[in-house]
Image (cartoon, rainbow, N blue to C red):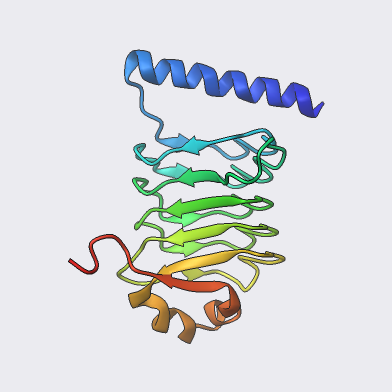
Length: 178
């Protein structure tokens, strides 16, 4: 059942947190289906973890049943080193802020399929990641893709990025105006 799966996932998270606090363990890999359907997921801040691998379906439909949907779920991977976001990795997320590392160079088809009320921060400033298809953000509603302002023009010259232009917003990365 969904509740039983939730209990197992919460136990895994609790054990992982204890291990990290006790032994200084570091999470480097998030496997395929790791948090798939973890509807009660309230927060998962991987900002200080150097995640090198992020599997397909890893966070699909996670966090959809949190009690307080006014506070967005944060999935922060800014310190990660993975280069691609696989198919359906973040599909079905609701009210979530996803921050991708500067190392991401490609987004696979349906990686963000069906997201609702989300903001996806692309932090790569050298160039925009390649969208493997126009379906990367298929069926997304009330969501935005935030690109560093210096990449906006180049991004919108690309057909796949142009196809989602109504979702694209620009931002000034930290330290831009120093």
